[in-house]
Image (cartoon, rainbow over all chains, first blue to last red):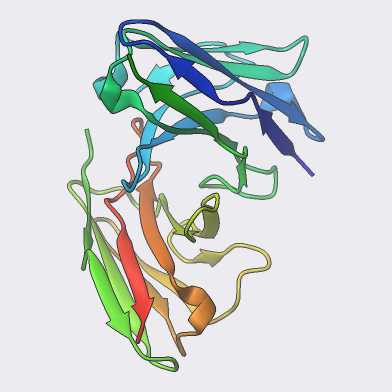
Length: 120
Length: 107
């Protein structure tokens, strides 16, 4: 059973960057694909991007292109999402998610979420 | 990019009712569509993938249908625990866009 554990709450200043981690266990890390999803307070889900560690090349939503970097470290089974040039509108809950081998579409395994607060 | 439009944005129904949520893609996505349930303060939960395949452990009162551009999520015999926001997501090609969500309340 795949499990995802994310890093803790972050409080950042506008203009700075944040790097959120997501460590996977119980599955085959390299053969999985990991997505990042943002949810602002009271708002819906936004797909930010994804990475397949076996390939190592991420895909990003155009909205976040140029500000987001998603990477994977196969040695620690950890994926990272770094968001730069933070502004107050980036205050949100950030999730990493993946699919179990038996699920052929969608995301059935989610991390607990990481709260990022952007405030001066 | 593909846009996903859900309707309605919210609905209220009685216990035992059957409700339907619609998701429309701006271009054809075959059956590469998933539905999620998110209860307040909780992590999203996958309900359906491949437009109509029920995820393991999800009650059979949930069902999905559609292909191409038009999809539906149906909940038969609505239960109090179904109060949540429901999202569709396309995964035909990147970006894997979510719909804006449909908030379901029980009268």
